[in-house]
Length: 161
Image (tube, rainbow, N blue to C red):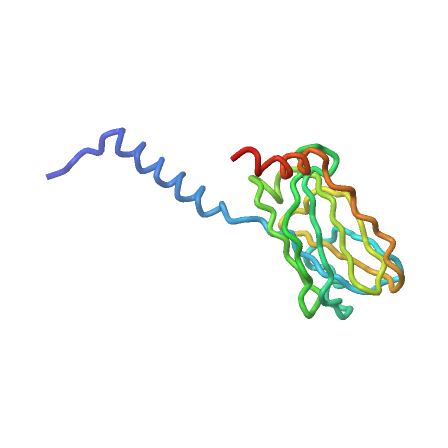
């Protein structure tokens, strides 16, 4: 006996396939890179197969700070990350479409005994990496003053309960 598939069965199968394939691509994007010593403190976006990412020994324990939309009041600070023993790091950017859509970020890389590197850039694609070079010397980086709106809301939290 032969059964005939009704159109709704095909639509259901197609919908399940689309949903499952969409879930497979929902992993969080990680902005990856390496911190090395160089002649000037700078942050560059390079291809993932750039030889400079592996030629020089990396700098461990560099602090990487990333801020999404740094020039807006609604900016978002991601947790600080430290570079590994080989100088590599990965910062999770948990925004929809990160790595494919254009998001502006400010990246600040600091390490004791080195001058900081600061750069405003677009979130690199999945096949790109950050190459951070730090020069020996005094760190002259001054963090931005705290956001007045956030500070006021934090001060008012005990009275809101």
